[in-house]
Image 1 (tube, rainbow, N blue to C red):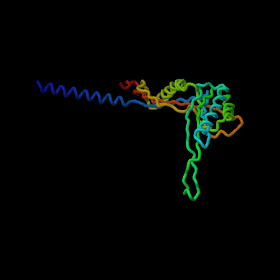
Image 2 (cartoon, helix red, strand yellow):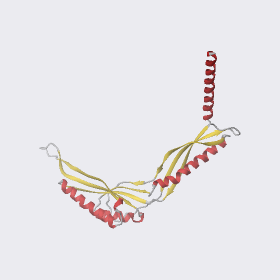
Image 3 (cartoon, one colour):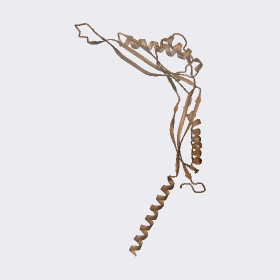
Image 4 (cartoon, rainbow, N blue to C red):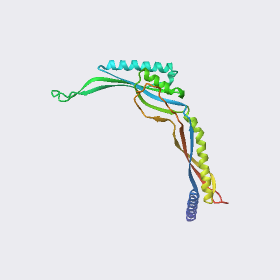
Length: 243
């Protein structure tokens, strides 16, 4: 009796293993397709990173000069209609200025001959038609460093929402084409994986602010992309898709 029970248990285990193997084989009847969506649109705002740098023999004098110049820059920006919420200090720094004494007595030793202070400000300009005049204004007010300009949109999440669904549709279109070419029926979606996207803010190179005329700026277009990977079941025509 005991031997019969052991034989029955072994048979059930064997049947279970066979069913699992069949399920795994059916589960391999799948297709993975990448979908992509692209959207081009005009920028809605610009982000500028500018600064003031001054040198003096004493650290306090260098920082005082920078503070005065940056205060004038901020005042001009506010007069130009830039809101306080669209300005943010990025960095305040102080560095010694070294020089090398080339005289024979000192052996060419380096010594501190002054100090360089700097203040960096990030500014968002929401009216792109006024971007050139704003740059000219801060130059006239005392800004002497321009560390970058990038274009962007107000709500990047909303842009992603617009193109996410299109990426899935692109994957479904490709999967249908592949299934038909292979003589198979396309089954339901198993998984969808977001692979992220690209594009968005477009930066320009840093440069010294050395021009006195209003700067001509062309915003162009921004390109946003989004990618997804979708796994579909496949079925033989007239048969059943994988479970």
